[in-house]
Image 1 (cartoon, rainbow, N blue to C red):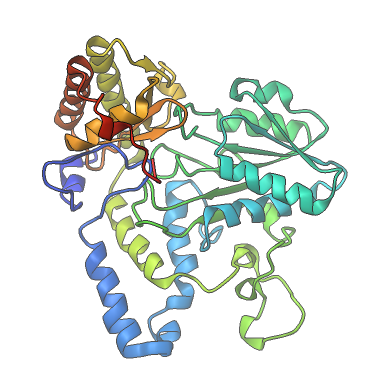
Image 2: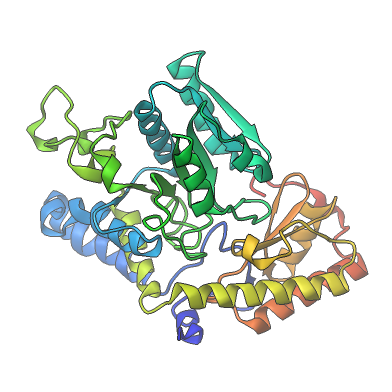
Length: 397
């Protein structure tokens, strides 16, 4: 049984704050600062360039990739780290499209994260006018998969509403139609149980700064199914994806396995932070995490709906259809979130009207959730949210 009191003690949480935004940026695990300082002073400071060999910097993308892989059900050697999520989306899409050469359609849904859609649109423009991205409502994805579709590209958990796709069912449907599937696990990895191997996923990508707590701008990951990886031609043929990077050959030859999905120089300080942050997951059972997350979410929904009738639940009511977040709608959602933040309860806003709250059992308790709901309802009841300063939009919402 996972001890969530012990995991909570592993985070450096600001005093007086209830943090419900780990689905956007995870808080700081206590051991990360010392690990990054060690990497800076003992490794970079004392080893300088020899740290690539002596400190094992070059091996970090694969080693940390295996640690992330454990949380998404990936076999060792099938995940590598580096670059940004948008870059990894592009890589996966380009490789998958090339494997289905007689088709030209990328299918996604209207709830997908815009950056994923932008990358798909840009890739289609590069490949030519016969390639196109088609989007349908999330509920219509299964019926829209047909023999025109080359690649199905979906984010498992909707970033606004928390709605969760049935990964195994949609993969089976896509494979039956002859399509490949690219999954974005940005709101899944570390939030819900994921099994890319068992579901027979083709490609999976994700960021590490949300539920995996690697810090702002933390590196992304990419998974490629073992039976596809040696066919996956990297569209971004970076030198560290080369078979022999330090031979400095003038022609590109892809490296072995998922290593070919490396592009540029790995972000060592960020990887060190992620490596330390992943220590929190040692001994955590993902089924325990999921059960606790659902209990926290259900309690929050019940309390908010009882005390804040002005807010409309935007997330699926049935817990099995949600990720690890709960969203409500209100025309003045931005101002309400700002008022909450001023009271020490941190959620966030997503246009046009979503109040979004992440539930991370590693550091959130039932008492935190009850207090957060009580604060939200008090703000709604006394109208405290309707101050001019709370309506002024900041650059980041």
